[in-house]
Length: 149
Image (cartoon, rainbow, N blue to C red; front, top):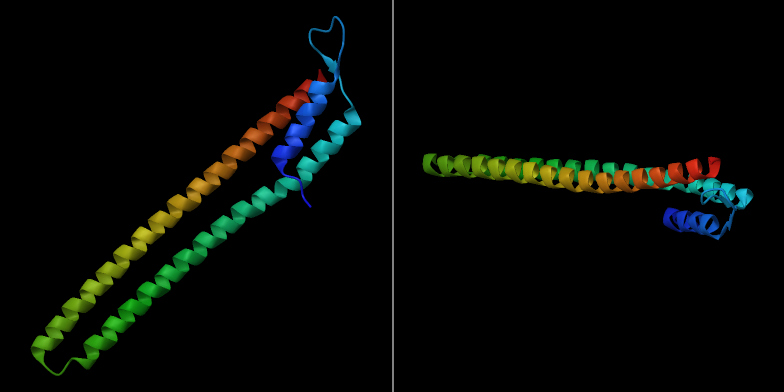
């Protein structure tokens, strides 16, 4: 079972905190380098999962947009078919065309709204993932810099 990045970072932090203080070193500590490297390797192995999650979010967005477009097209086709069957009378034809335009306009508006909502949702998820990954990266960078001192 995979360990979360957060857990791995906490484990790395524990190793750093549990390290023995080196006298007269200005707060430097001796740590188990092999254990720290093992955790860093685990973090590297687990990072792609975060990236795969972001890709899945983008793919879900594409599927949702595609489905919305198909639904809009189906609504337009339905409206057009209905309008064609009502061509017998001039008044009925006018009403059907007006209804088809309304349905088309509404479908396009709904598709645009759905596209906007999905885009915002996906962007928020990706931004959160990016932020967490940046935070993890920064923490790892700080830890590595601390290990080099």
